[in-house]
Length: 145
Image (cartoon, rainbow, N blue to C red; front, side):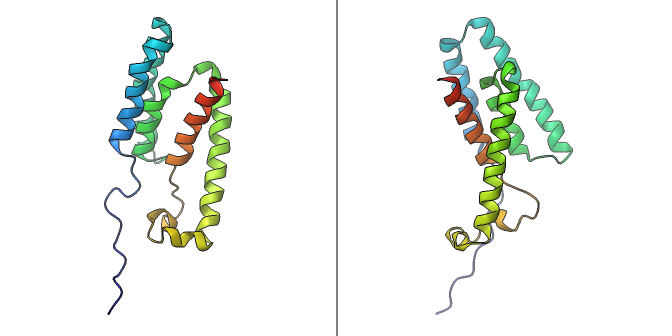
């Protein structure tokens, strides 16, 4: 009996599901009025369309994927502008850790856990969903302290 050949990845193999992006933004819309003063909530909400436009432009320039742009826009209202330096540091640390872990796993036996994962052979492209999401989680956790 022949072993089945590996199937090519489905279209959108490294996409962020729209439902996850919508859920991220909806969480802010639902909880924001309860935890923020009304004026602050409105200004924070304004960050979403601004970052969506910036993300579309960055995607058009090939800086990152459309899914990353959508997620950044959905998460933008959670971040205070005054914390931009902290957010940058958190994201850079997460990006570096995720990139190194991804590249190391690619060349170890860990690759066998997901042998057909498209990111293994994507060249310079890197799946940024994990560092983006963990950056949001770490920022929110640190803000709650």
